[in-house]
Image 1 (cartoon, helix red, strand yellow):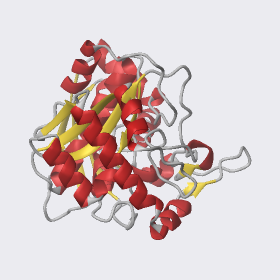
Image 2: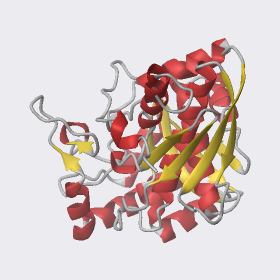
Image 3: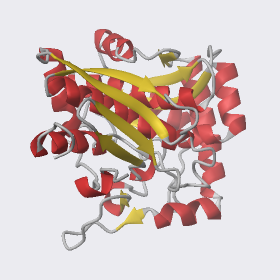
Image 4: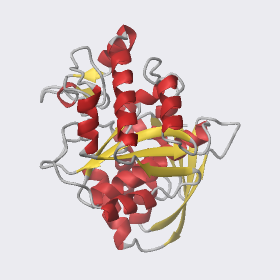
Length: 325
């Protein structure tokens, strides 16, 4: 038992946290559980110098974990109060979440909690069915984080811009041997005889082509820009933009992304995120300029329908995540 939480409640909190999306499925976080407060810590020793040299994705991953914990606390009948990066002297502390007064969860809380277990990265083509405008509006509204906006990439010129930049990024990463070596280190065998808590299952990272898989491998067949544009035109694409580009903005972007993702799942949709292209500064700068974004692009999210559920990736054990001071 942690603090005044029962063993079952503690497991609910930790399992909800570990179900958050994270870069290369690192799950780069630890959790302190007290009677009235939870503390989320970033594991900065988990580094991806080729994919995520500045740690933007790692910080965003922790922000997504905070969003899941907030939902879990509400479902357990407490009113959470989230404070991001509360202590400059302790930069590993990503958030403090106060578990406030007793309050019954709403129907919306229960729906979002149910979506946590069903959320997974969709690494296959979407069905040929448009996402209703009202669904996209609800997804955008659920960002609700200061300084973060989820903006729809508009059909036509803007989709063409994104397609061109995705192709540029794909060509760059396909030729980057150091990047491929790092990706191989975090790709795991996932047969029934193997059990891993982190990493990208090989069966979930197909050699298929961008933008479906997102990650670029040596075997990836790169379509031309026109084909990427045609695929994106049949989907709904959101770009998450922050007012600034600090670590706090990266955490907020992940927090907003997960809130939006859970809303999409609750609406019967699936999603996948792309951050890899945004680690190339010329690509990121061009996206900001050509789409006349109000701030800094942090995440691209593809949203659509799927005919079958996406299998969940491996997750760390509860004991690995609970922080022991």
